[in-house]
Image 1: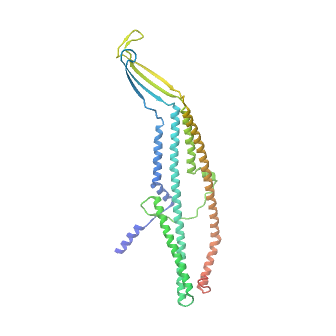
Image 2: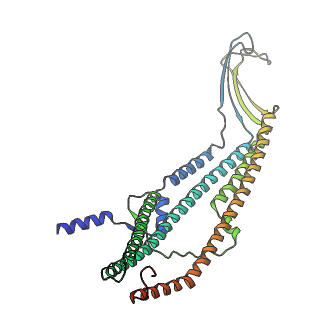
Image 3: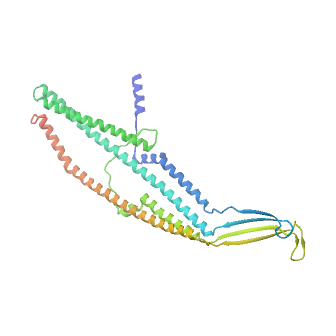
Length: 367
């Protein structure tokens, strides 16, 4: 009973949970720290939108002394400068475009995670299928090694046949051990990508994938990498509009309050307790514009760079997609040939050879 309980406990510890592809992708997206960082960056960019109206600090001034006459007067002022409203509007548009880029960056990272999980998932399944073939081959060679041993003892064969059988079976065994180590490494990679404490391995599913038949351009247009590259064009365009709007004049508003002791223009004497106020409005005219013109020219170049990057990315994706599609069609043709022609013939060859060997018509080396 103690041994049974220990075995059950050991089995539970080493048991691996079977998981489907979509569940594996969902787990990886939920636990991946890189995706979480991109989400935090997106929140950061979203909060920056509220900083678009970055109005400078108001200026509070005070004066004391002989401002208007021999008498000492006091003067207090409050002034505020503003950029033209168009500048703030363009700043908000730029920050909005940068926030959209951060959102697309999340999609880009998620797509990369999906691709990685899918590749490792199917790699493990393919290795498992290879393991089945090697186990089957090991079983065949083990059986024939027993027959070779028996034939050698009865004098029906020589030592060369027995040594060859041992060598063949040993080679298969070594291949199997190497493959099993490769499977364990792939499982560790799978565990790392999922970032979960639960040991998991892929469920056995149909390995053959039917390619989605559609035109190429709609597929590429939805690619997150291309969307992100296109968003960079919008950011460059918004930045150009912002730099151009900085040529607009600045606005200045102010209010001053002061005392004017002495006799005024209306022949009335005013003490220091009497206050006089005035408001003013000013426009800042850009005179030295060479620096801003350079920024506008630089932003125009950044638009061209973004456009070139987009076209380069589009060409690269089209090339990669056509290459992948061509490989798929090549493998599909090979698969069709093996399933319909090669595998049935191979089964006939093996079954015939087995019968001839068992009946003594051929020896082991001929088999």
